[in-house]
Length: 391
Image (spheres, rainbow, N blue to C red):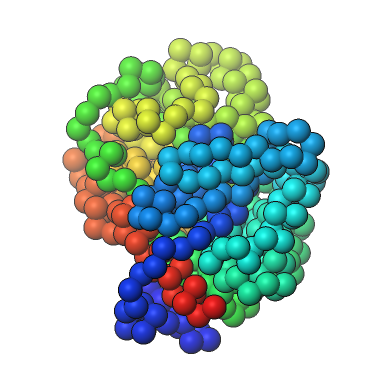
């Protein structure tokens, strides 16, 4: 869906009808898979890999603790180039690199710069580079709200530097109509394109090997960073209530983060060692088998974009129970249940419903209808061609 504010080209524009050309793409990202696990990092990797396979010259500029001093670590990976600079500082856990800033002085060597998430200093630097050069910039909103920064800090940031960062771009991408509307409410004035966060529906299928690592029957799964914004403690509390009616239920937690030690201590204190398993970060390649072994996915986050974990679980035909966030309710409808943030009792009730009446839900059909990864790559690349043609 296109928001045509300020003359964004529609599908019938001359730019979109022109013969596509090979582009030199600089992708600015804080994290890239497999160096870092997570949906955003994998999105960066997969998009770079697939655009390189289309014949584009793709370089990913990332912040990572590799290299010596300001010297980058450079490698070729799946057809694209990764350039990683060590961080210079990490205020509030948000790494910033002088090396990245220096590299961004070279954006004139590229046809398009694509920065991921306004939440990172690297994207702020890419916005500054756009204002100082003629190279078009696209910014992808992977979720408008921070899951780690204090709310008062983030609110101030969003209405100042965050909005300025979006308005420095030639186009902003978001995953849902709801997030597009939030950008408009924030005052962002550049063209906004809704490009769904698709997944590989040929990889994530109901058929295939199933992991033996999940606990319990029914097997409840949580996948995500163990940070406050994901509310993994709510997942654990809802699971405890579920066990009152399903005493053989188990909870498997995939992911890592600062809350892990506290959660593990809580599990020990409650005597749930046999019922709850912590698997840490798992590779993308192992996740289809993990999802297939689950009876439900739970994600009680207080803020999200459009999480790959939800779509991946649904693609394997696993019902999901998520927070009732505007951008998730329409996606989950028919494939699970949504619950108000923080309502642990209703999360437990919803988990009971989707596991006891699983046949009533059709999660894979929802994903097949509009969340295919190939479409994500195609639509993103079409927008790159458009803004590069206007340079």
